[in-house]
Length: 124
Image (cartoon, rainbow, N blue to C red; front, side):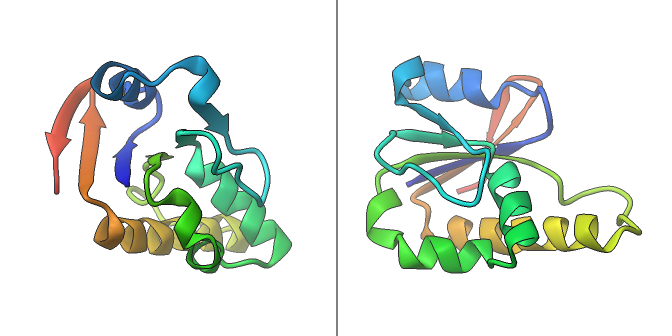
């Protein structure tokens, strides 16, 4: 599995397309608390985490339950872990849940890349 992280509009998907020849048909956009792992590339993991928080589900547990389905995936997550800690409890839990998931995925990943201004910083 490959994990790509970075801030909003920093070129994460463009990097995945260029570096791994990802096509539009291979991309799943997370909008709810479930993921179609039949797609090669899953983007917006942070939105998946938000939907999980609203549904009372731990995103990391979801990934543990589906571990055999995402082992060869390219996963993309917007960095929501830095900056001012939100005062809203839901926003704070969202940030923490996304952080827990990314920590777990980082350990499991064979490659982790942070994208900033379209440039890759290889973390693992």
